[in-house]
Length: 252
Image 1 (cartoon, rainbow, N blue to C red):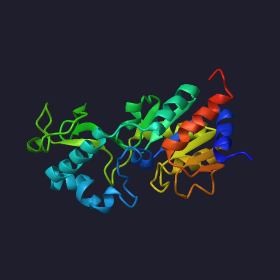
Image 2: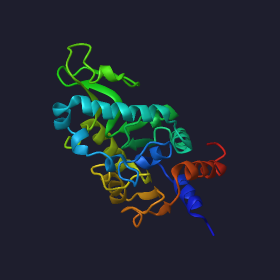
Image 3: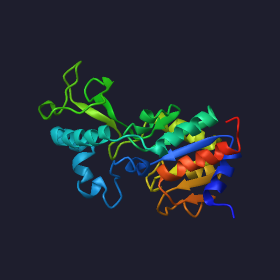
């Protein structure tokens, strides 16, 4: 009897364009807490106090202390075998591939992913709330430097992430949904499938006749729609999936 991971590998062999959607679950395997799990960050903090434009205006130091702490956690983390397997999938499919992530931690880039879209921004990106200056700052700040000031105008810098109540970047959304309409397979990894508009991407693939492969230890709203559901951690099952894909594709 064919195993679920073998079924997923066979779907990938027949795939012309692959869309990958990742959520917090893949980063949790690198030691970064999820937002909605039993150990999620939101269980200890009120997001209205920490992740809204109003919170930043009201108490920028508190907001930056939290994001600075999160940066420290992320900098100690390393990409896991799940991240690395996605790099191999990108190399296999080439320009017939797009990785769309809801994560802001940059672990996909550190693993080597290039063809990707960050729907919710990046925690190491910084934007001036006054003049619009932007920079990438992959480091934490000493306590006395919080909140950081813009080097150009002295205004308040903010983390380059999408706060609650804000819209997602227009160009990122455009690229993601264009790929979803083109993809004949979506590989959905470690996401609760309840945060929109990202959660609409797998449905967009299905609506255009595509197939779903889900990788998640727990069932989600997508499980009943997926052609294959792999209920294992991504770091364990994705390397196996890549090996199986390559085992019958010697030129890959």
